Length: 222
Image (cartoon, rainbow, N blue to C red):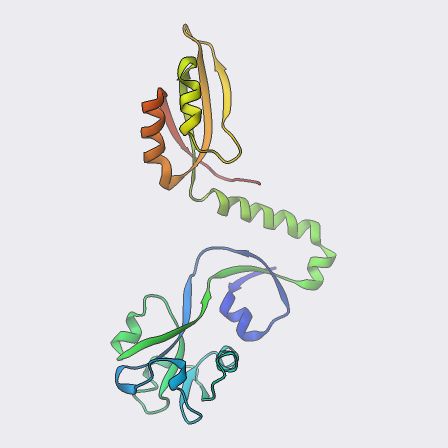
């Protein structure tokens, strides 16, 4: 098993199984050209257009899909300077914000590929050690699923229970536990998306919930 960028998997043509998008190291591979080049879309490429890139396989497949012809110039250094050095008329390179391209007078013509860190596995190993690989994959997936979730806990008087349940989102349904209290009371648990927390707290409080606690979630195993 291993962790690598999706762009490397595509470029190498490696025969591996992709198990998880690990949701970090996000970037894009784009076609870019100088502002004054006149290359505003892939249709402006010609058989004489030189495209500098560290990704000749991805570039070749991109041109094939687009039905266009161009000369692919493989480079190993700073791709963005090649038009300034008259080595190429366009580039196919990896970007994050695109700031480096702008500094060198380049603009993005088209996005070619989105990449991020992926968990991959040798296909033979997957067949031979499937159970162990499944354990590792499940463990990592559970952390990814928990990243933007919070556990919401609250006390709800019995007379307000149905109103609170009516506005409380949950993964599969809230958990209820009877509270030993002078008045009939329920403890309610629910896993909620982090971005929804402010709205949910306001809604359940208006519906009658009290003693609201928000806790982190370490893992979610589906």
